[in-house]
Length: 269
Image (cartoon, rainbow, N blue to C red; front, top):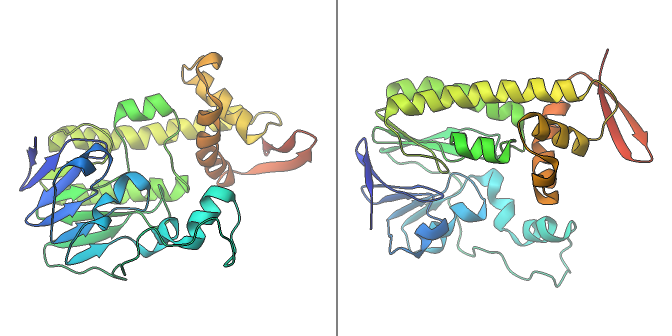
């Protein structure tokens, strides 16, 4: 099993990158979930499916932020897949993870830091001398490939990035889930890139709101403006990116109207 030393921790490269430190495992998922990685403590930064494989393994302690547990619950899974839920539905009949997860997590080696934005309950961890930031920010190729970073709350994500930037001064290493494994100096540069990219994205969204448009039209306009050709923009990317676009729009001073084409927005003049 290939690992890379970051500070005092070992990191298994992947998507997500998985952190190992003295019996603690963070964000086991993706292809790394096929590896025989065990730990007394299994931690997840958030509830997305590619980050929670460790919660299915034997461990003395398991933690997933409470705000993100809807995604693994019976009712939450029905809502996510079918858009509705009720106790009598036969579509799902069990919780994804049956064992009780800890409501809170305390360990002298681990600091849990609330960094919402990517998901409502997203957390980062300072373990030893390393900050594991999960999906609080992304590698440059990930950002430029998707154009919109996946944030259910863009503005909280920007606040979390500012918090991460401050905390980064007190650690020796910084690791994210989806992106390169760099030394601290390059990771600090990447944090700054994410902050600047977020502001650039806001400006692009504002430019697209000069006249009445739907949120999906905003996505297409911004993706075109960031270098994507229309034929490269798939329906899936529009639907995924619309979540972040709507969050950005919600934080701007916009007018809203209802038309035959759906809800439209325009920057308030």
